[in-house]
Image (spheres, rainbow, N blue to C red):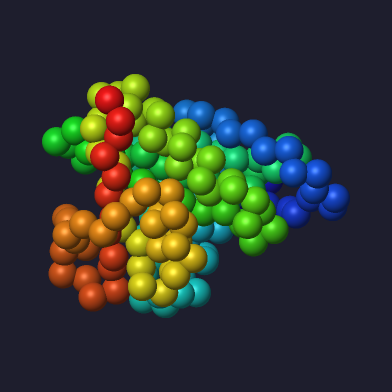
Length: 162
């Protein structure tokens, strides 16, 4: 897969999902997913144009029947907190529990790294993301960092079990 290309949909997905942990940020399949993530964000927030790769993040890639279909990044923001970055599942992979599996892998890694809490920011134009995070135990928190003054941002957090 070339950077900028959206992942191809499996022709007959059987539903076999795997999660690759700690994928290199330069991995071409990961980069393609991150570019697709930003393209999705640009459709919802036309003035938002972030760098697809978030510096100093560890990444995870989900595969559906061997095809890369989703990704998420973990960034250490200090104070025992990890931040979810660039959560994305391609349209053809949604509603299969892939996003929740990606977050579970991220939470396990955060705990391995000694983090006690995971936080995230999502936008008001992403109701499906808000619903997912609430469903898997994330609760609203005060906006943090660069999101503190954004009326489009909603922040959530979850304490990790020791």
